[in-house]
Image (cartoon, one colour):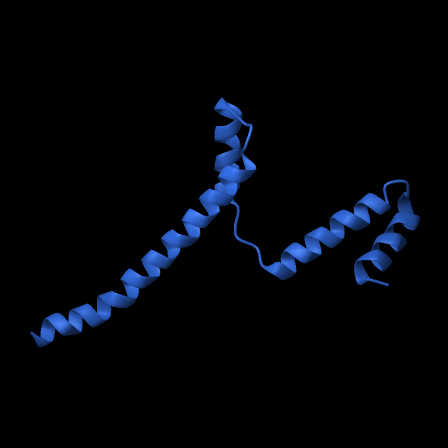
Length: 94
């Protein structure tokens, strides 16, 4: 009986972490399905494969990506050193 309890105590954390990982994967699948609305056939299949293979990013990483996208949109008419200077200033938030 003690062996069974010992084994159970060792396996429980592994079972819980597996359940947690499945939950994250299920959330990712739900998100990707929403983003794939309107796609069909091979196009949808390719999108889902790409979407599901992307690593999860943090809120800070997403904020940096959003900032980069906004700065790029504002800098579309700039080139060379002018663009570099603008992007540097924009990304620093000044």
